[in-house]
Image (tube, rainbow, N blue to C red; front, side, top):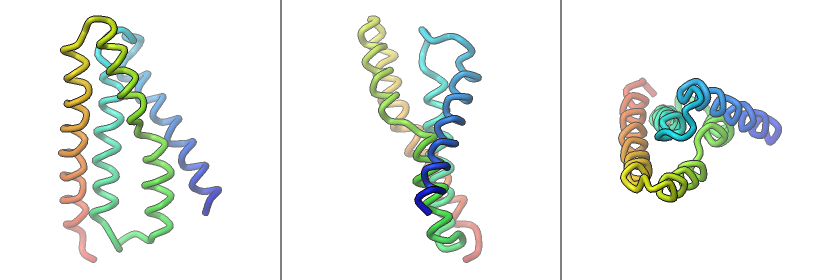
Length: 121
């Protein structure tokens, strides 16, 4: 199980990188939309897994939730990018990044949990 968690975490981190690169397409100085997309979609997927509850087994939940989605999502990158935006004089974007990521991720998780809860147990 530990090996599956480690591999899934690595896969999740790789997917995060690809999504960020594809979404930002070299616009590194702009608003960090790539990581916003990663964290919101990751929150939705984790909400969906959580909403499914006992439909999936505990080990599958751990590998996908902790491993894959834990590697995919990243709060530390949001924190660093928020500070970088503020240092570049874009305090407005910094606030939007921090508050917007939190709000959007919570809403996405709630939607995912609701959808997951629709499946029969």
